[in-house]
Length: 300
Image 1: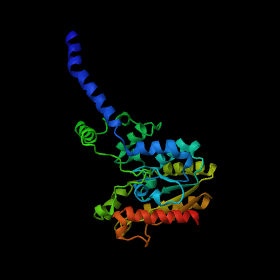
Image 2 (image 1 turned 60 degrees about the vertical axis):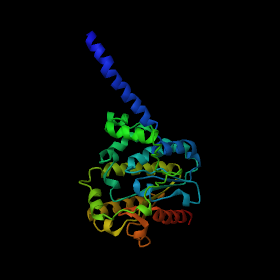
Image 3 (image 1 turned 135 degrees about the vertical axis):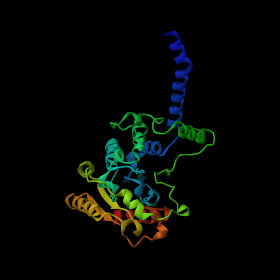
Image 4 (image 1 turned 180 degrees about the vertical axis):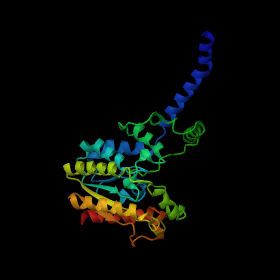
């Protein structure tokens, strides 16, 4: 027994201490989720327009081009259930919120982050937004979502090389998809990746949308559902059944709920290849164009 205790003290305890220090160090590295939460905590009562959703709005709508106070709370792979969590969490603080913008992309109604290939991102909503989401143990710790080598590299980059891991503007817009770094338009590949294997999550996502609509209706908040512009290499390769199902569901919601509007810009001729970062995301030029359009649409 004594030998075992000595073994624990000499070997296992230092490992545990190392992992705890690494976990704390990782959590203290500033990130986009912290930025968004801190902004909402301090400024939710002043926001007039709130942008939610996935990367299509995170990169595609820039609050700087809105005439009234606007914040972008969207993020990569953020699904409708997480949009609802943000609205519900800050509901009592949204004193001046008049409009919520929610993207309805080709994949929106058929997936959640928890079922997506990027489900590792769920830990950010648990650790940094402090959402009471029932998830597995991995989402309670940074160190369980990546290997030790990657975690050590990240800490060294931040604490030694002073690398920033913030990719959002002060108003939450994604700044990384720049026209100078335009990617190849692999629309066929991306369309296939976004095509659902089944429609099992459609009912759950529709229920989530109904909850969002109900919450906003109660607070006299308008909702703009928007399908953001995409390059032809993307939309020409979409599954028509999935696409038509999406349009049918959202058009019906817009017709039956007085606080909802649907804008479909997927095939818009107002956007050309110079406005895109890749096949389904706008760059900063396209984001400016879309943002100015939405601001004018809101005020007309």
